[in-house]
Structures are given as C-alpha cells and as structure tokens.
Image (cartoon, rainbow, N blue to C red):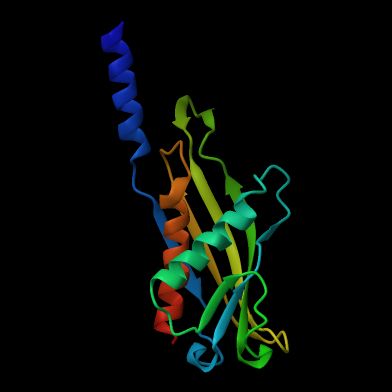
Length: 170
C-alpha cells in the first residue's frame, strides 16, 4: 500500500511540473514609455462568473513586484492610485481576463482523462492617466496541460511578459 501511495505521489509531482507556455502580443506603443515616470496597475476585471476573485488583485500585485524588482525606468510602480507624480507623466495598466480554465479540473474528453488544464487569456491596455488616451494594447495567453497548481510560476510567467514589453519599449 505504501508503495502505491508513493508511486501515485511521485506521478502527481511529475505531472504538475509540466512546462508552462506563455505568449504575448502587444501593438507598438504610440509614445515611448520612457516619457512617463509612473505606472499605476489597476485590479483586473472579468465577466467570467466562476473566476476566483482573488486572481483579479493577485496578478496586478505580482506585476507590481516584478516591475519593482527589475529596475524599470519608472520612478514609481504601484498596484493602486499614484498621487505623488503628475498625472501627465503617469500611465495606467488595465487588464481584463477574457478566458480562464482552472488547473484543478479533471475531465474525460474523447475517451481520455485530462488532468487539470490550466489556461488564461488576458487583454491589456496601457493608457495615459490624465487623458485616457490609449498608448498600447496587448494579449497574454498562458497554458499548461498538466498542472494542478496556479502558484507563483503561473503569475510570474504573465508578469514576465509585461516586464519584457516595458523593457523593450523604454
């Protein structure tokens, strides 16, 4: 019995370590992001009724931490409103989760068992705070075919795409 439990546990660990695939596409920004001193990150939105609401603030928190820890050109990056920098020099990151499939699902499709496919599709926009003018838009999609956990790797993969875009356009 112990051998069976150990084998099952090892199998689940191997399956949960599958590669996480994350891709992104952003339109070229109409202004260089270096022209701005601050980036506000707002809570994400969604129309998906069964989406865990914590994700709407945890993803922006992770993006904030990733940007702060990687020394972007911004003087201030904050998940929430920035009042210390002129609104004309502030950008706002808006996000909407368009699709989400929980990694805790186990389904039977086409005669085979699928273990917890995890996927998310997010639409993003970066706008000027004072005018609301759109600077750029983008999409981030992340997918893992065998994952029971969302965890920090999932959030980090999405945050890395935002960081990469900002670094390439600053």
